[in-house]
Amino acid sequence: MSIPSYNITRESVTAVINGKIYTVKAGDKNFEKAKKAVLEERWDDLPPLVSKGLGVERWAKGAFSFRDNAILFKGEEIDPRLNKRIISMSENGEDPSFLMKFWENLQKNPSWRSVQQLYPFLENEGIAIDQDGMILSYKAVKPDYTDYHTGTFDNHPGKMNEMPRNKVSDEYEVACHTGFHTGSLSYAMNFGDSSRRVIITRTHPADVVCVSKDGGAHKIRVCKYHVVGNHGEKLPDTSFNTKKDLDQEEDISLGSGWDNLKKEGASDSDSEVVVHKPVWAGFDDLSDDEISQKNIEVLRKYAGQKLRIVNSGKMKKADLLKKIFEVRGA
Image (cartoon, rainbow, N blue to C red):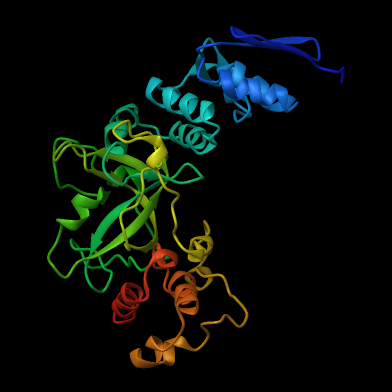
């Protein structure tokens, strides 16, 4: 590597790194950042500040590339809404790779209509995309975790439900039809009756069969989903909802139980990871009063690892105990 050289004026910052010239002009939002990077000789930080493409390509791998301000997947431009969000995140120094994984997953969906309908659904409240490019949303179930329509599907955290894709209705103009339904928080909170439980589901974009037209695209019909936790609080939006300021977004917290999801093809007995001598060992045999005496950190581990209660690590003790007792009483 040759020794970089640079020139800083009121109008621009220019640096020559390994024979390549990088220039950021005054007025560019990255001008001050570029000047600071040069003065501190942080040469690797300069290229992403100069070119959107370099910033995006820092994250794009495999089938993704960048050309003429557009992100391409296998040589074809991705949806412009997603393109804009990825570039924006890259410019802000954020990792947009989860959105790229989402797009890659979405390409496995065989329905053109489902792919096109999915974007309005993702802009609903609380719909999130996790780091593997999967959709996180809400579902209302009975107090015993069975579904409202048949009472036969088990929706305890860690369970996976599926049916043949061609058995799921793709009639988007029909509100209620054959298939599994999951959706926004408002949809789940207004389904069933007051005794409902609200769970968090994780769906592969390829398994979305239909976005229901009713209620402003608040729910989807899918052929397969995993139950990843009990609803503790509203999920943040980590997709590309343009209605919210990116700076106000928060990270998803599903508790350490998130790592214990049932693997593809595993049996029911394999649905949880065995942890040797966990701090909450024996809690199932304790009374509610005895549980109440435990310290908050142990309770959070019990709630997250054993009961898979969403956002247990952020709850106050009183709220956490209330949720624990509710789940234990199922």
